[in-house]
Image (tube, rainbow, N blue to C red; front, side, top):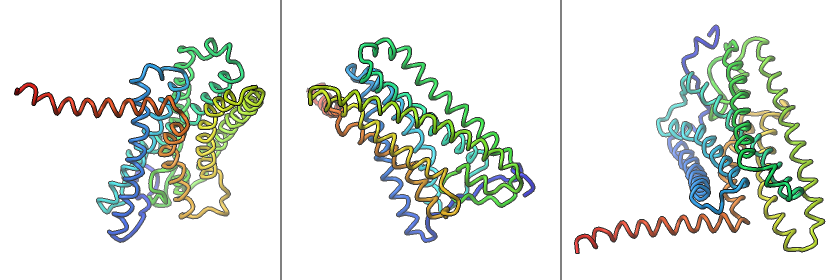
Length: 322
């Protein structure tokens, strides 16, 4: 293989060699995927259908759920399909699309989490200016900027990665196409350019991380000055779910991409990939709804209305016949 253009397909990492373990892998991934689909789907539908949730905080949460649902749908279904078909193959174009979508969605999510930290900062520290600083137009602009930044980052990294000379085979040691694993297939020093891009991105991500930390330092200082215990509890209930989501997303993602090469191994890379690509999209709905009574009430109302509709549809033929 003289260059990347001669590669028609890549071979993804096989979880197991026996058919029984392949089916077990399929069942495990299916359970996680359905949980993420159900949780994020309920949040998206509840926020859209309930007028009481048409606020900036829930608008950003809606975008986060869309990103989570899209990101896990980019990687998991292909891995499950390969287990059912007893194959490891993924086409060159599908691999490139997967790299683009993974980088796009996770970059956009990180940018959105930074925006959500700013939203919480203004709500707690500058409540009198909240309606001016975070109005509907500002919300749309910040969300659009998050999506656009992720798109540009993904376009840059995907184009540069697949312009490299790949002559170290076509086996990707991961259950989806991941940039660090594809860089291992490069046969020249040209991979250093993409490594440099990744370092620049890491610096930008670190800047967002510092912004999030400083925002929460100011938030906690403001919350501790609230005289009433009920007010402090309400403020913490607004901020702690976002902080937990940020911690989960950053700790798994950054360690997966920035861990020292001395401790790198296929098994560790696999575990980290599962953690940062599957755990946050699955747990985020649970984290946000655990202490959010408004969201719980909206989801409960949505589920009851669906049950009522189903009962009404069943009863209608009986009424019409009578």
